Amino acid sequence: MPAFLAAARSTDARIDEIRIGFEDYLYRAPYKFGGKEVDRVTLLNVHCRLHGKSGKSAEGFAAMPLGNVWSFPAPDIPYDTTLAAMKTLAGKVARFTQAYTEYAHPLDVNHALLPEYLKAAAETSREMRLARPIPKLCALVTASPVDAAVLDAFGRLHARNSFTSATTWSTTWAPIFAASIWTGTFWPSRRRASACTTRWGPRIHLPRRR
Picture (cartoon, rainbow, N blue to C red):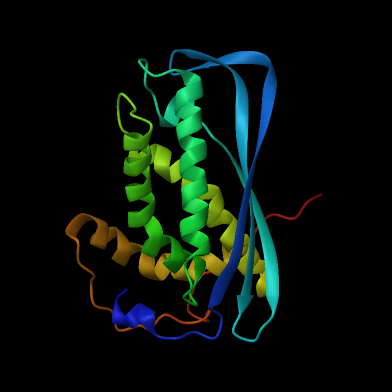
């Protein structure tokens, strides 16, 4: 991790537990996506428990459809096989994330573990002897509810909307990380990572329910 992100923040949290589960549903009527008829969906449900430096803990939850039809388009691989690959990968992503022992912001955690998630996808492809490797998009879809559950728990820990707690981080560091993805390096910055919200970061205002 770059030195300017490694600076300790009072709002950082440490993950204690990641739990996953699956739910299967049949649609009332099938639909076509990418030329394929889809009549069912499997949800990946993720629960996260973490704690802050003060000792206070919180739990978060997130869910994501395992869209293997569009994230892992493989005409030569059966639907059940690509779904099984995503389920296997989800278990590995959960274990990697729970094993992350550093105090950090959820987006720092996700950025640090992304290479491990992609390695796990390649490993799963080899173990299952898939006709083609799990695409990066599929790996990201599988990992997304884990990332969202951690961010939800982080927001609950600090009594803030999860989107708000990520706004300043994303508007400040996202361009830097985007550059790092393409160049493999990090741009220097004069600003130091701060708490989950700061005075100079824009805020998201969600519409009120009527």
